Length: 616
Image 1 (cartoon, rainbow, N blue to C red):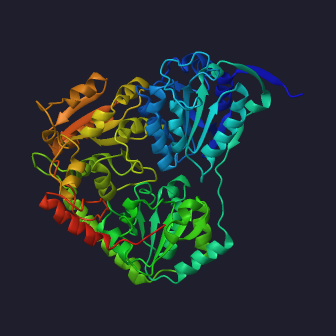
Image 2: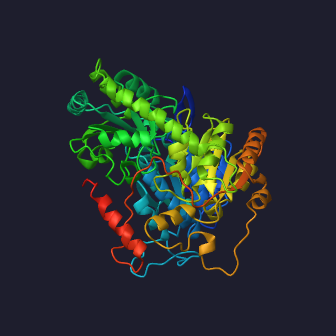
Image 3: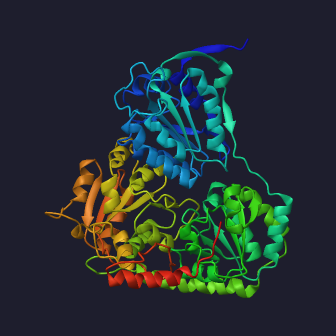
């Protein structure tokens, strides 16, 4: 008979997490970087007691908001290229539901996080308990069912022994490159405290290594044949290149074949920006260099990308009627999108074998040379829009230029929503893999500061620069206090354009009146005069407001020497964005409106839709 140990379900869960390991750069390390926790009556007595007993092996971190602490956990995984991840636990009710947004973010971005919300009593004797939302027609439902559509795996633990198969399945999903995403184990609060005789083998150390599927021979041959026949091929590098740690192999492949590369938001930094064949950003927020090639490309090798509408210009960008898409992706769902030739494989393995199959073949020299000239022309345009200005309110691009000049290409810049993702995608010059940290799959306002904290936990010796607008800051800023508490320094650049300026510009572009986006255009009795620097300082940050690009550069230089989170506030122009580069994005305009501006915008919209191809 197997040896057993009697533990509560929560204690067994905590011990199991401690025993899961991985290897990073030849060192064996815990695969869980810790647990983020906000305790309440649904987890403090059960899982809280269990975490206390293992805090020397599995650190517990307290966040200020359940959504933001889960964002920090997700950013930690992203910054670790999915090699390591974290867990997050909350009480039942509002604490749990606060994490649903984070679960959706992780689901869209294919990022691992273990969510452990408390749940109602499995025995139902005290029902309805505090914070329980009752379903009139289904006694098995709780608010945690909201996690089902945004979890790769969901389970409700209603008996203590159920944690054994549930955790084994959870680890399979969290470490699988194709299935990777959020796992939710809903922990009934009475079951957390119930004991069971668990087999000791359940707590044996296990080292998880990333799976690297190799390509099917027939798919590989078809992809190689398509590329050999190409005259104008283009590579679209997505986040999968980074997660597979295939950046060096991509560089070798590009050097050997001469195929130019463009990058999605998730894939930016796959190649250093200084690489002459890196056309940088593609799509709606792309560079003129990348989008010009994308229009002409006859073969598109899409590596590790979901081919989201921002990448494809809502499927209007790739205009060559005879084009072939090759989907090199570990997930078959993504590999076959838009009738692509699928090449289902790990990005590193797929690139390696594809390179071998193409040995000795190069693209026509004229195509590579044309790409290089386009890159040079784009760099000239980018330098103009990021140059120092004496304007009263600088543009986002000019702020980006200042941050780039002072912090350098080796710093990690992190952003998520609003106008900054578009400007940074075009203009930031990434120097190494992972130095461009974008959450633009779900584009969740409020991810930025919490995400910066998670990235800093993953890379404590590196400069993490968080860039965000006043709208995102007002939504979720409380993890500034956590960064100070943990001694994890961030440099936060807050661009105050007094509202949701990005959506205001979109509103205007679609013929709408300025309405409910900029603060001045909202219903108000008095406009707020928010002192963001004072607010950040009240949470322990070093903070100042600057009035010019020169002042910003001086403050950034000082921030590099600071040992505590620093917030720098600068007012910016809400109406200016970079006109160079970029492409059309499908945002439906009303067919009928009393506004002539909307009717004009609708005509333009209908013309643009003619460029779209019908995908799958």
